[in-house]
Length: 278
Image (cartoon, rainbow, N blue to C red; front, side, top):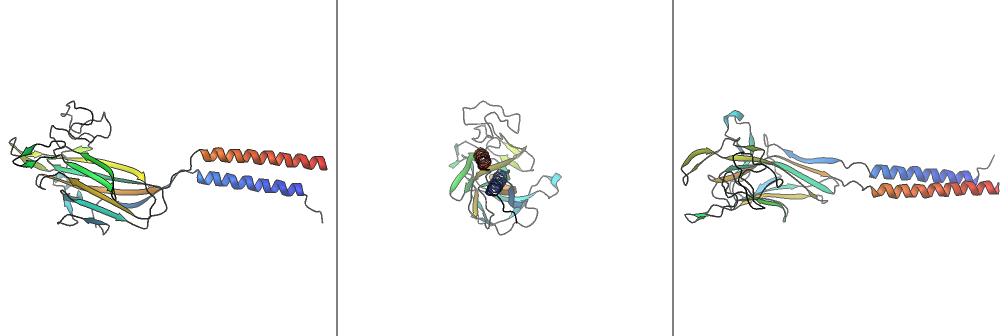
């Protein structure tokens, strides 16, 4: 039987190492895939994942706009309350994204801290937190000319083109960045300005991505600074939570290419040495 040469065996090992390295680099450089771990449009069961500080408990409401024929259900209405979404047994991941529709109902007063009959109009804040860590905290206005602190970008426009005031940096027109205005069917009677049954609501489609790797997640949705529910309230719809791994950076390819180069040099040296000793 002919004995296999040492050179042949060595080259075979280099080939195996090169293939293994290419496989490693290729696999770990694939785009990170996202997994949806929670999704609810509240057209059916709310589920036990939700809890609240509100005395009214977890419940849904129907947007009163008759065009929806009572089919636009959402989690609400709530005031100075917290809604908590608790998720567990999450797959391995490094980042998470929560997206949802925020319904702001009736006379949200944004940055206005005016006191009327001993009752401050605002500021009216809405907040999102990951456990105790604040991810988002902004004021919103459904028409109060004091404006709001939220805008998706400095040049964003109001849902109502009629609001075009120029504010100092950090303050924006009412309903700036809203996806819908006056669509839900809510009205408000303003005794101060003698306006009766004035259409007053807005919808914001928001999304936040953050680092997260734990197997469980607690998201707190809340508002503060609001007056009573008949004056200012809010709700949630189309809540979705995705988790995903972070892709390995391009440096991995550079590292892999360098190793492959070293393998090639070593292989050529082995082949050259074998020829000299033949």
